[in-house]
Structure formats: structure tokens, C-alpha cells
Image 1 (cartoon, rainbow, N blue to C red):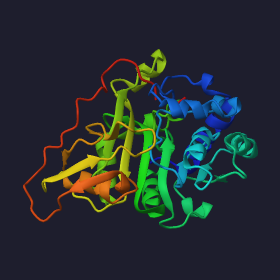
Image 2: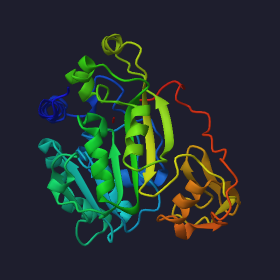
Image 3: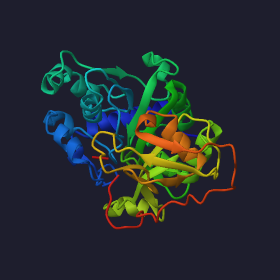
Image 4: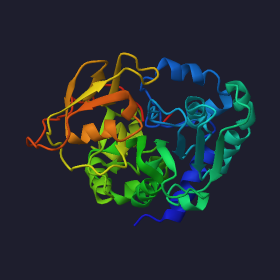
Length: 349
């Protein structure tokens, strides 16, 4: 059994005292190699270097089309993604960051006003809470109040992931979205490795087995989640490689919606057409690793995909032809070949 008090204390010490910047990490598991859109990089150029130096993440979990949204960042740390989101949601949007490490939050908070000035806002649209991602009610985050929940290589650090995901779906509005990057494992990790403070701090010890994650979301009523990207992690640390043995680790970005979906893709003869109107996506829009919608091109979709496009914030940007009056059986919705075994790939900077 993993003790949540000692786990939280260990993680706070690792990210508050042991690591002074992302250069102190012992593995590549907390270092993202995922490409970032140019307009995101342009925003990062406006963010204070102190915030960037204390960033630990394994991906780029920032979806498109979020202007005006209320966004919650779980484990926000020094606030890099919060401030990136702050710019993307615009002055009418709102971003909430929550983290349990005061040293990280101190960095994030002291830049709130200056970042608002850099973005040209009359006042800051961000707020930071000290708390636990398993207990969002402690930060007064109400039921059905958030459009988007993001997290960047943090959920693996929690000793109670079932509570984390339960809280996520509690605070999400109907048709709201979870979009996060994290470290996953190809098998279950033994208890003694989960307790190892370095493995946990490096985002490895707490990595979820991919099938256990699927089962957990199903139990919470999320029958269909989508993978955006997946890359196998090279640890680049001989000592830790010997310790973990044959466990395979992956940096994965996933997306899920608070929708009533079916547990497999079903065919209703529906067709989706992307209008090309999502900002920064004039030519195509990527829903997941096997759905890229080219502007103006009709594309056969399963019922779940049709709902993801027509019942969420993406609805104004798509035309869906057909309904669910006639069922044609299972839909062939197999994902593209994964690049998970391609060389390279880190998991939190």
C-alpha cells in the first residue's frame, strides 16, 4: 500500500528542494521532445525565464480552440502552461492552477501582474491555489464549472489516481474536455519501485499501466478516450535502467470528453466536414492520432467521433451529415501505427 502522506511529502521535497531547475533531473523522463506549434513558441517567448527554468513536463497538452474558456491546470508548478493558456484563452477566459509545492507556486504567483502586462491585459486572468489534485473541492472548484482540464506529467505523482480522475469529471462541464500528457508504463510497476523516491520524483514510479488507465476511465463513465501522441521514453540513466528492469515507459498525450459515448466505435453512416475555422488550423484539424480532418473534405466517422465534434466546443467548426437513426454495425476506427518504439523521447522539461 502506498501512503499518500509520505508520497506527497516526498514529491514536495523533490520538486521544492532537490530540483532547482529542470537541469537537475536525473533522467529524460521529465523532458518533452514533443514539437510545439509556432504560435505557442511565440507565446513562450513572452514568459519570464524563471517560470520556464522551473518547468517539468512530458508533453504539450494544450488543445486548440480554447478562447474564452475556463481552464484548470493540475499540478501547475511554476506556471508555464498556466501562462501559455492565459494568452490562448484571452482576456475573457480564465485559468486556474493548482499545485501542492509552495516553492513552485511562489514562482508562479510573483509573475501574475507582469505577465498580464506583457499580454496586454488590464488585469490578470489567472489564479493559483495551494492544494492537492485529488481534492479540488478544497480549492473551491465547483461541480460542472470548468471547460477544460489539462495536466503535464503530474497525475503519475498522485498516490490516488482514481480520486484524481473522479474529481476531473466532477468539475468538468458537460461536454468539457480532459487533455493531458503523462508517463505511462507497458506493465504494472512493483510496489517497491513505486515507493522509490527518485523513480517517483522522475515521474516513473507512479506511471500508470495503460490498460489500468483505460479501465479506470471506463469505471467513471468515460467509455472512449483518444490518444494524441505516444513516444517511448529513453531513460538515459544506467543506474535507474538497471533498477526498473524490463519496464517500458511512454510519454503519452490523451484527450477525453465528458460525453455519453459507446464503448466501441459504431457505424451510423455519418460524415464530418471541417470548416477550417479553428484558429491556427486553417487547413486541417487533428482530433486524435487517427483522425485528421482536411478542410472541406468529407470524412466518414463513427458515432463517438461525430459526438465529439458536434456536442463540444468544436460544433461551430464542423458540419455533421447524418444521424443515428440507422446502425450499420461496428466502425473500423483503428488507430494509426504508433511511433512509440521510435528512438528518442523524454517524459518532464
